[in-house]
Image (cartoon, rainbow, N blue to C red; front, side, top):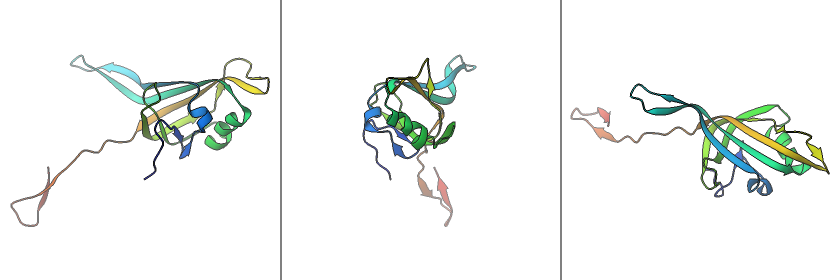
Length: 147
């Protein structure tokens, strides 16, 4: 079993470098759409999303996203562990998530650094919850039952 540090984001099996892990404006957006059920209660549907905005990244930090995480591709999918609150305390594993190539707002390279970068994770599917079952023995010999 792989162990992760408390509050450590992991992208496709690799820890996000510590210098970036603690920076930026991270927002877990949760599931994309809320709908009303017949009993008028609300339920959220669809995959979750998260956005991580950085005011500035060093060239080596941007290279980590482009080369290490994305492998040079426009997007990549796989298992990730991200925060599910905006305080960066609770990290949850997702069996699948898609990381998209970083986007820039405005002129992005100035003074030897990259500015105003947005990292987006979409299609985050949580680790499935497994129900607890107890195995019992029926009155008929050799016939086990699930409860």
